[in-house]
Image (cartoon, rainbow, N blue to C red):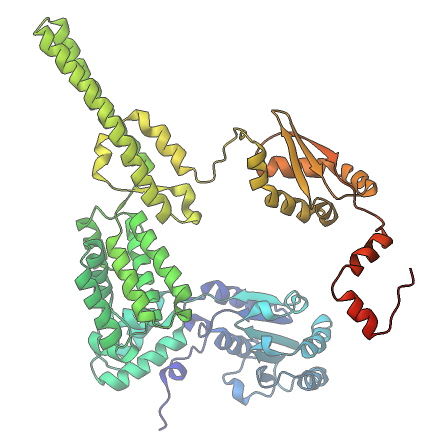
Length: 572
């Protein structure tokens, strides 16, 4: 007997065998039960999740047949290879023919988004006025490529990616039926590699069985599929958190150079693993006890630390295809991750500030009580002065410490996360007090603008003159062209007086009409609020004295030579 691959051997034959699409199978079963059958369906979703299989099962249920290959009333069509208008015209001619045996004539069109525009237009006419005995089932992985006029005339069902647990359960059933030994970790690797596709998972399982024969081993799966186990990723993450650069580079090189894992897959899978850790940290249940144990033993690592690492990995993943040496880029990123400090939220800083303030107040109260009791007045006064000096000194240290902290962390904080400012943990934080809270909060608002008007003078205006002209040019290029020769005459608290040279009276009058635009440009670029007064300067000369021009020309040393050579003469 010819061997059948697992994807065909274990292909579902009824709605109950379809995995992970209960929201669709239940709706279709009820539609058949209550005889509410639409004339057209659209099945959309990722590859390998059961679109075509569901279409075939629906066709069998509608016509009550066991094998659609033996039915003349069920026609399967691949739009990728039959995408032209001629094929659709032939289909339109055949839809008018009544079914031979079944109740419906059913057309299953796979990869329907591959049809040409003309073919879609031809199909649209049939969908607008379908015969009662015809049912269309359109399957596609890219529903957005289909015309909206087609989608609006069909019942659309969106298929979902299968979860890792659903894939693992099905693989377990298959392996038990095939009498193969396995462990849960190995099935988890296959399910993760399949990325939500049951067909891909069965293809990988076929490959693994051929390699491992009777017993499926975790290490052998890693070699066959080029994937890394969760335990290896956990070891890598632990080394990053402990800032163990040597171990980080060792694990990474073993995975890429020895294990043969591509850099892009390494980054992608590591991010998926970090997502599991993040879910566990925020309280979501996880099937991997190994991760739960690690989190309990590493309380110093928080959600923000994991998020920051994931963001850096995703940035590199987007850029990796443009880099000539991706392995080198990954090494540099891993070293950078080891150098990152843990992060602390503003609320935690404020708590530490309040705690430090309480300690200082307690010292002051103790010294005040000693004064009230009359004990060693001179010494107490001296102690009080020392406390005040230490507080003043600590304030200076605090201010410089805060500036350093904020400079380092605001640079490392992305614009997307500006609302969730985090500050690197620093030993100087224990010296902070309430007086510096405002400084911290002011520094974290990166988009804050200074409302105070800038004191300006002619030098300041000349420095910003190009920006002012550019601003005017964006609004009105003609007005900007008239302001080519500007001279700043006077600047006071309310007015800016400028002179425009080399401008005719007509252009000057035109320019005065645009005073509001010019005022807006000056005030925006200078961050001020002044009135603009324009004075007309020198006027463009309209006529040139021809006699003077000729006189100047005669004085040129080449003039007479040219006149003699070309036998010319001066008319006037």
